[in-house]
Image 1 (tube, chains in turn green, cyan):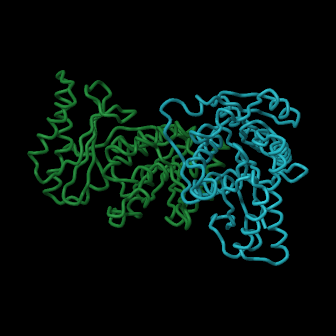
Image 2 (image 1 turned 135 degrees about the vertical axis):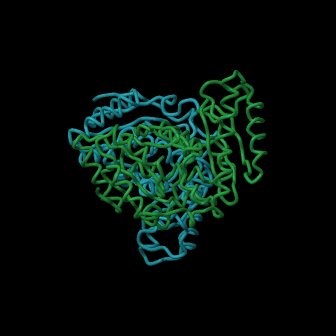
Length: 279
Length: 279
């Protein structure tokens, strides 16, 4: 596996690969890799000739009081996992290369960035959109792979790509879960044993809402109420929001329908987790 | 000359040209072409294998009370001029294709967009940056050519390209002027005969400041004072700003030096004109 740290070297390398007719698949990550990431890489392998994975913990998407410094980093372990999956190139730029002194350009995807996670984390989605556009310009992929767990992020990236006439094909793949349903996340490792058990309430409540929906319930108010009720049975978990939304506009719906997304965020101690399902 | 209106067709066409190893030169315009534009196209021809010119009057860079509707349009005359110069492809997208319903993604180049013209025209430079990035993603040029007359715009585009790791080479070429020094501009045609005469005050005042600088004057305050004094002799022309700035950061300097830029904007009746010189 080739490891590239330099931006210009990465650009030249993929330009050459494109020239040779190779289809480039790209999986951008912040490292601390779990099975969700590895599943994205497997998919990328199946759908492209050359897979690039990036590891970059993006300061622009963390708020000043958030866990940028504490965010788990394990370059050695990650490199092993990525090589094992059979990725072709690992791109590991430095923070000072991505955001050199005097950096001042940001991508704003209006409306979609202010709701849901954007409300609790102002600037977060601007930081995500900006780094993803930069990485797309560096890695020049034909296809890029994202997990559905970060649902709002995927909606914003798709909208950005569409609006800016970027011709990257954004592929969103299902959330990979632990056996008890907890969505895989690099932040799960923050959880103590008791917190880890309580954390299953995110998925349990979503599945309960899905069950109701499948039985014919369409009222978003009632679905939301069901989720809130289940969270009340886990008082150590603080529900931050439940959003029942149109999957493209992220606007709240009154009546759920097939394709409607239920997304939520919750805090367990200092750890903030998110999850979502598509009805 | 090939004329393309469709975005996807344009993307496919240039992808094919790039594949064939052609160097793509690009001149984005808002039409109403004058000798300044044509000079950019001539340069593009000399420095590339295939020249694309776009004509698109960009609503996102006009304020609600500005001259978007009145902005001169002459597609037929423009097409003739472009063909005469020997441009290979003319790209003429529609407004609804560039900004379809639900469009919501914008590029913000912080700090550089709030000063000078950005102060009088809030949102203007955001609109410029956004459409230029979109056009770059559609036309995929190796090199793009801009006139120095829109100095702040060129600084912002260069900064955006650098920050977003776009690998377009931004080439800025000297302002083309009428015989009496007035910078060529599509908006010059708004001027009545008397206004046209008064308009030379922009360049005259800049040249006077340059003369002083060449004689050894370095005080930005004094250079500014000289310009203001000359404008007072043309009371029909309203000076909006004089900025004596670092050419990269656009920060006001106290001491002018080689490379310092003096830029100004002025109103004559309803017409807003800009000009600048590099010391």
